[in-house]
Amino acid sequence: MPISDEQLASKMHGLTQETYGTAGPLFVQKLIELAHKDDGAIKREYEEFKQVLSEQFADNISSHVQAVATVALADFYSSQWIFGLSQEDAAAQAIGLAEIIIGQLETAADADDGLRAYEYLMSWYAMNIAAFNGNSLQIYGRLDPLKPDVLLILPPAFDSAMQEGGFNPDRILRDWADRGWIEVQIRGSEDKRRLKIRKRVDGKITSFVAVRLDVLE
Image (tube, rainbow, N blue to C red; front, side):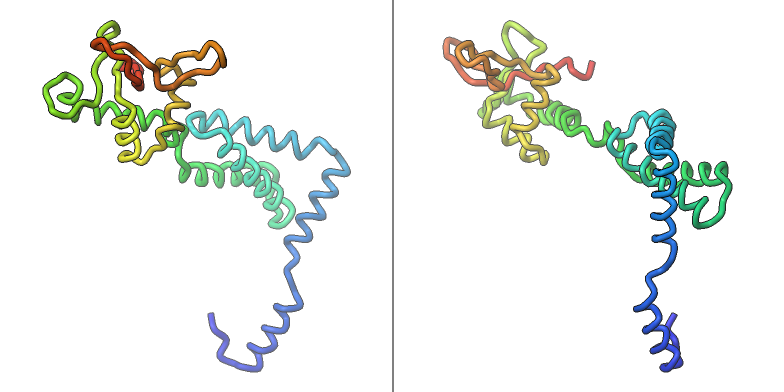
């Protein structure tokens, strides 16, 4: 709200330049005192908040929960040291704040690019199935003749589909290989996995991305 009195406004401006508040220094002072009194107290109370929030929000990303536990702990302390709340009320308010924050964050499933990319690819496959069964002039790949639950996708088609969906093809392949969602080949001489396998189909050796179709089952 603006101050209409210019002299008062000038005085307030000078005071705010000289005064930086008292809550921050008091909070830090109390934190230091607590650490000197019991050097394990802060860690124990943080672990308690983290445990409660981890159990309550098991579907959320653990690093997010840990960060929010830190905020909750700071709120727990400030409610007691600055605002004079009881330990019980401070804990309840801190958990309430944490619930509000975590409610705004994405869950682990929401953040799972690998799963989202797989679901996207399955939709893309359904829309372009003619390009896999020989009923189109375009050829994106085919089902593995020996493994009908494995889709063989030509690498350019796979890369294009992933990029159209907003995904990084190389990163998605590495993620899927770690999860066992694609078939890989091991280079014997280098002991490295090949994410795009070479397979003889119709008498010709061709590179494919071999995606399992039974992942969501």
